[in-house]
Length: 260
Image 1 (cartoon, rainbow, N blue to C red):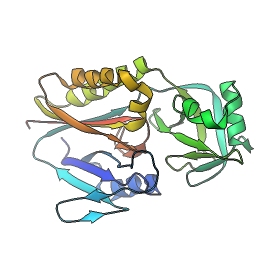
Image 2: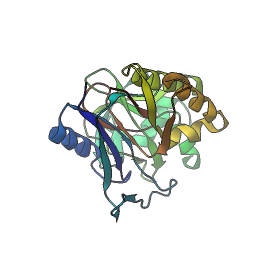
Image 3: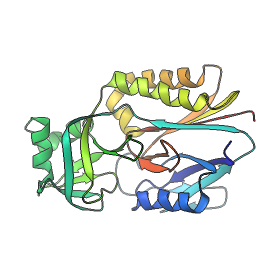
């Protein structure tokens, strides 16, 4: 059984999300489960805050350690890869300039087989994010939010150069099914679940619209209708497919606590 749960609430606009989660794991190690979600500002992309009982901060991470109980944790999203791999040949921070040596937006549009108007870009990127396979064979999702005049694309989270990406696709039914699988996997790790914690990406809500209640129902069915749970819509999620935590987009991270 893990020593505890590291519950993490970072600023969603902090640079270096990968370095943050990697450094956290290097400091605390595999004896903890890592789950959390980042704060945003209703998609203004300007600033956000973290606070505890002792301070109000920006550019910070609020954290809590939970121990003395049984802990289950899981993460998932429901997106699937399609098409051939793409190589990120030029990027800087959260901006992607080139895919396969050509302007990113041009390649993205060609791969989708459509002519995308710049003012309609978000309607396509919302349902066709990027995925990066990790050593476990699972895909870490990255969400493109804007296209620029030079055909570069801005993402919510940093993109490393020379990484191999896949375009991802998904429909509401597949995403909802994944929601039930996430809380169900976390709940099965606890003999007597008593509380569920869920961090669900805001972009899933924006995509599902009136059908988002289906995702809530799926989360409930996974953890059990008699188990209370609470959560938040977040601007990036923290969790691990196996042991090492990563920063995710368009994903659900969940923890279930119970009697030890």
